Image 1 (cartoon, rainbow, N blue to C red):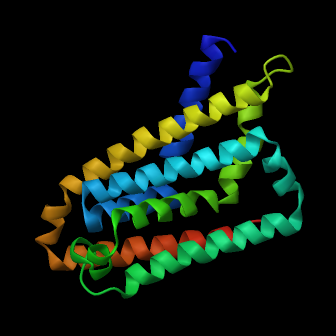
Image 2 (cartoon, rainbow, N blue to C red; image 1 turned 90 degrees about the horizontal axis):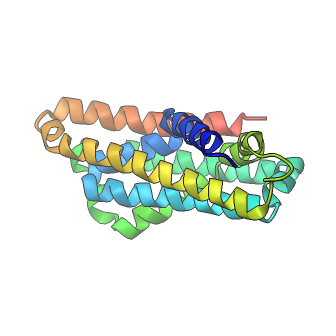
Amino acid sequence: MSIETYLLFIAGMFAFCAMPGADFFYVLSRALSGGGKTGIYAAFGVATGVLFHTFLAVVGLSALLLSSATAFSIIKYLGAAYLCYIGFKMFTAKGGIAELETAKKTSNMKVYRQGILTNALNPKVCLTFVAFIPQFLTPETSSPSMIGMLGITTAFIALIWFICIATFAGKFRTVIAESKAFSNLLKYGLSSLLVGFGAKLALTN
């Protein structure tokens, strides 16, 4: 793969990662509720989820999963249910986004594991590996090692992007806490978005 093609892949994948989605709002909500450090754990979880999809792509399971309607549906509904579960817990928790009871009781390692599942159970990420990455490969460069390299690159891009989001959101957590009304508004808004992404995922064909 030429350096020009690789740089084009990085630019395209960055644009994909930067699009607000379930991962984005999960990291944002964790950073606002638990602080920048908690958000960074969520970012590492999401990046680990990308590595999981990289492994599936390298061994050829991504295409197999997407070709099976049953397997796709199972992953889709599990992912949708999990997003709705996280959103519902946040929505019903006491306090605003900056002082959630759930944030105080949730360890950073649990946030990390939740980040993994949020990404790993999203078949849209799997679809990205099957549909987007092959566009940058040729018959000569299409190999498990090259797919692995592009997958690791994707995980690194996601990690850097979401660490930036977590750090930025964490700095504003104390400001948000000063306004109870705004803190409540953010909690209900972000939790509703997570549930909404779960419902949207469930309706994906």
